[in-house]
Image 1 (tube, rainbow, N blue to C red):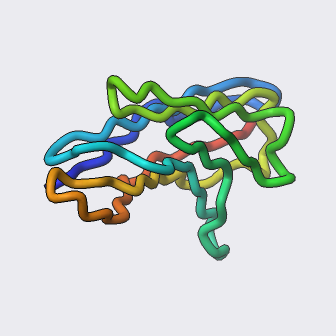
Image 2 (image 1 turned 180 degrees about the horizontal axis):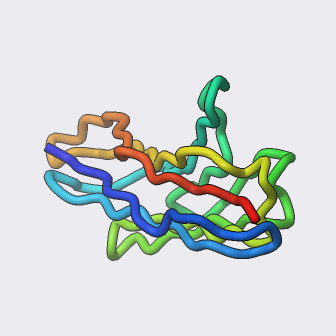
Length: 120
């Protein structure tokens, strides 16, 4: 069994910063792509950023230049540094990972979500 646990959400004023973390644990041989998604009230879940094992990154247009995704493969952890936050960034943020088990089967896992609220 594999678990992804997010941390770092909270309430921040517009223009502020937050850093989200997501640690994976359990029966893991390796983790391929990892990513962050978000879901605002009444909206569909959307991709925020993804990162490959080798560190190649991609971002949604709405966060380019403000958010940075990174990972520590030794710790099976992915991070999302969010700067210059806007009220439109308010959402539940979910961590996602493509996990390779010791039997070399790949499964997609999700974290439980962490709330980010940007408000004055």
